[in-house]
Image (tube, rainbow, N blue to C red; front, side):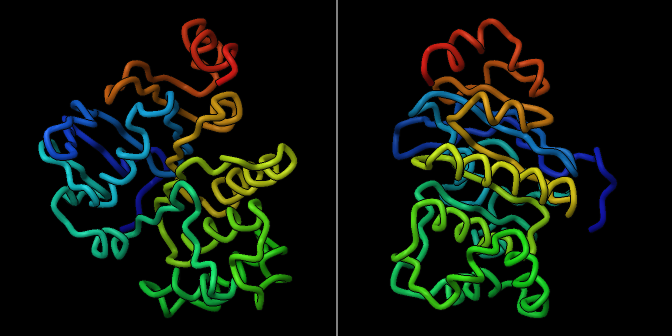
Length: 243
């Protein structure tokens, strides 16, 4: 479904997610509009990764509603959610280390085989290093190259919504700049909508159009990226304390 920039692409309403008896998400209300970069910041253990995993159906929300492009996806299995146009680059990258770069990318294209050649060309333009390393096993890549591969693999499914979980985690500053520039480029030049969880609050808020702050499974603040960057409460908690 084609949607105009600014239209709601994703909405979460009253979403509660549990791990057994433990409530990890405690009534999440959140919106991502078509064409936006939205970031979610918060401390370790706040529930950020659980939120992304819930969007992908593993685990499923126990209560509440998740709507993507006008369709309720709350109870859909992960494979069907991916087919509808949501792809995730997970925390820790989770590439297949014994497979080559090209084989990892081919796996990402399983749900969109018709556009494989086109998407492969786009990924190689975004990440020339992956083209150079295409015959290497994923496990031999540097951490930054593995992160590029994880993002590239997600892009191979031709998603309309790209979920990024801690894309800068464990990377050198120069590589972080490169990764964030690619995120900016795929949003600006390719119209990709991006929802990103990120502990590097300063970089994330500078990049994002809008942002949410999560504390203990609850959304506590929301606003523009620039607005939250200037917010004294956010600065004290996430920008000046070494987070």
